[in-house]
Image 1 (spheres, rainbow, N blue to C red):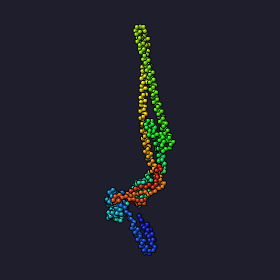
Image 2: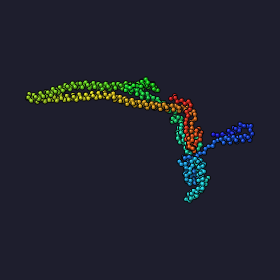
Image 3: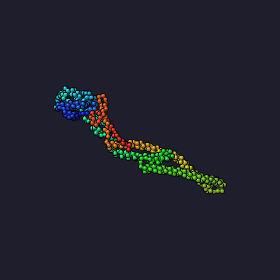
Length: 437
């Protein structure tokens, strides 16, 4: 848009191109050029009030009438001596003219310090109505702090973006893309290490369950981490697999050995019980003979008592052996049940551990994908910061007009109006390479 100064420069240039013309003709040509150039300069649209603006009305000689009134949701203002006045879609000059007209010839009773009342007639030129607060503008898109900004007269897009913290490349919200890239790279490598560990963990559990392993031991080393680290992880899981197999075998051997020992002890106790049963039967028969002889008078009572004690002692030994035999059989049954439960309990524990490891592996896989995407965006930010934005940002102004919202394409020097919504979109410079990450 051309202004008067540029128009004068153009006219002077035009006049200098025709030195052969006379002075009078040069003057006439100069004035005509200025008039033509000024006539093509578009007039700036006068601002119209809307809801949210604040108007200050003051009256000379009546400071108590000075008041700030906001434009209400219904598009009106309220002021003493006037009441309610619609002001939406009116210019500030039109509002002042209306307020002056409505307050003119109004009589205001002013109380003096001594208590007397003075009648003051308001004159039109004593009334001033000015806009003191405008609706805010709103900045969204690729800026550091999107949101509401207070409007200032002659405010431009460049100033609004500056108040919003400037442009924010790809909206990563990071203090330093280079440091952020280093942190993300470290996190990325740590996740791959965790992925290799969980993958080897799953492989070892599948081996313990005897399942068909989809990944062999060599494929476990094919991960983007240091080969020494991957090899150490695989070796640890392999050693743990061997250790757990050895523990399982030792536990089985212990239980089987316990059953064998219980069988041997049962056999010994059974033979002992048989012998003690025979001895107890003999002691019973001996006691019966002693009683018969005692009744005949050929045996003393002392011998009968000895026979009774021998019979009781053999019976006690038989009962003890019987109890020991029953306890040994119960121990053997316990060993048998432990062997039967061993496989099922161990398989259940390994399946639960495999489920947890598979879930952890899936979680790490999703985190790897997310971190990889962040690295790509960070690489783009680094490239843009090193090279500059390349292209100018795309700026769109959404402005409320008489017929509704209007969309205007603008640049950084575009002059804003209260209530404008500024949408900023940074365009990627051609040739930005993010594939390296």
